[in-house]
Length: 485
Image 1 (spheres, rainbow, N blue to C red):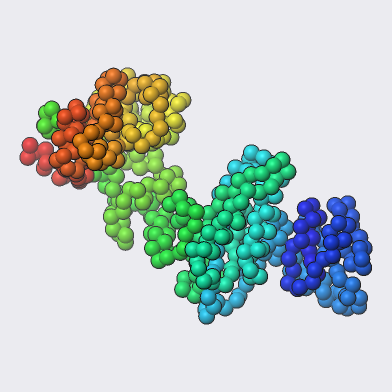
Image 2 (image 1 turned 90 degrees about the vertical axis):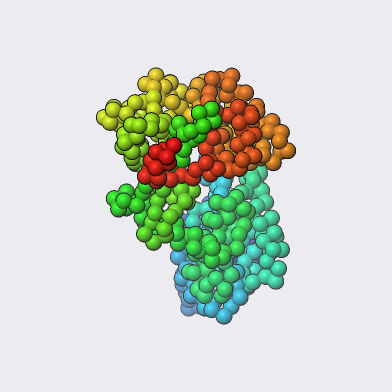
């Protein structure tokens, strides 16, 4: 017995070993409701253009009814496009894997939505059908399933050489797909869990394989094997996701400040406000770890307001030690409504706009193409605008000139590279010359050694920021530092 897709005339695999004569494939068409070819009875089933081909050996009515009942149950657990198991059928597989050495894999077609948007739904369907056929080969007679719009699971005995298996599997899955108009590249990411080492049930192994795939995507890797570090990272991310909104109300968030040292005055003239989170269970969490979660939960605007409000209130107690305050402003918040909030917040606290610098990262400058007039309006109010992390993005000189930044902050990676370049910091010299031509102050970030300081001083940087002078610190420590002179 076999199932045949009427649209593509693709054989969908059945539990038995019976094969379909070529004449059956050649004889089927969409319009046919029933066709008899070489004594095989072919029936169209359901509404998804699946065909059921019955071998001639099933002649007795009772046998046929029993056969049809079993196969209809089997069809219900099949995905119409790929021909593989459905998600529910995959997780209903109760095979005991406690003592079996199996590999459970998860693959996601990362560019499926792009293919569909560019070439149409039919092209996306062809890619899914193509992937289904490839996985049928890879699963080596074991189960394979489509478990999401662009995601698949499959199971196979543990190979002797895992690296070789990865290379073979990935090279097959990533081959271009043949579409109606030509070919399209398939971009995919693969995650794997090993049983029973990483789990003893299909549910656990599937979850761990998916975790490995997600981790591989974040790292920019084609594939990855699950390990306990991935599990711990996912556990932390789950806690962070549950806790991010409560962080505001529970007083877990705090603003720290890192001074910027003016090389001419030899003292701090500015400080950057940086958010910190101390979680009751996880302890101190790096912003690199929690900020993406805040962004996914739509909390970046609230977080930015918190930093701004806290910074202004702290600065009001520094009458004897006036400093400029810098805060990071995400590009999606460069809107008329949010900028108006900033202006009103400063006015309500009698905080001079000229004492606040708004930092915009270079990598996201393309998002500001429609906000140039708004940034100029903020400058007219007295705010200073800085380009942050300069040197790691792909900014054009035209865009930098259009926005007319007041400050340029050199990314720490360029400082490190220049120090290692045998005292020939050509790149930083060029950046400083550019900034001077555009009438911008230059701040070097991530300064950690005396050699870096001497180099930057000689080149002509205006200010430095980094661990050589001070780490980010709570406001009380900043006040003590300023009082000590």
